Length: 277
Image (tube, rainbow, N blue to C red):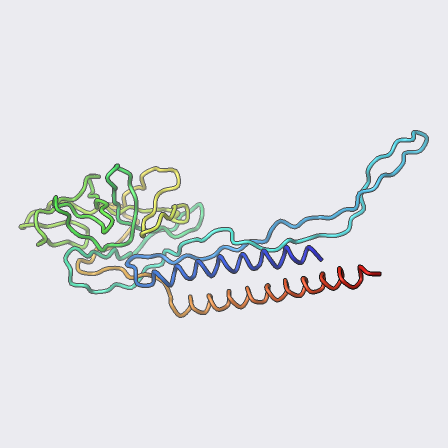
């Protein structure tokens, strides 16, 4: 009977974590460039139960352990990880020159994992650590550098922050920044061959798993993209589908809760009534 407690409890924990994940997705439905998480649910390893007893060895007086198979036991499920979905979000017209949307047109598949590659803006914090994002809601700081809302510098093709003297600039679709009729830099776009290996840090930022810098997608013949000035990429959260999944997870949580209560009542009856005999 106690096995049922463990199975029902693990199911409740799994559904609770799935609900928390969908809640976070809903909270970021209007966050530019946000990539919705998807749950990866796995079953705990199946156990094989055996009854151990001692069996005597003839003429020696010694005993050796032997087992009799009882059967298998599965102790429930758990949420292994939350995997971001890197599907392209819709573009929204903002009219702001510092808003830039990255539109994927053609990206290859990773031959090893079969996963579709993903493109990102390359940004850098004050310590020189490189991060990646799809949130193109940029601005120009007091020193004239193109930055994210968190203060990360947007890197150019040469690996240096892009400096813009004024807010009046034009951006070509290939990422070239034009100011006063002169090219002052080109926004670097990085490619992750297997984006599932990226680590999600929050605020729309990702980092590589091993800390290495991702390769540039510029001048890569297998990659086609365009940058849209005055647009941002919206979140790829499907609010209707997310709400449905949240309700399903809540109902599954309730079902496991009812099972747990039923086991509790059966155990109470066993202790208080059968135990008297």
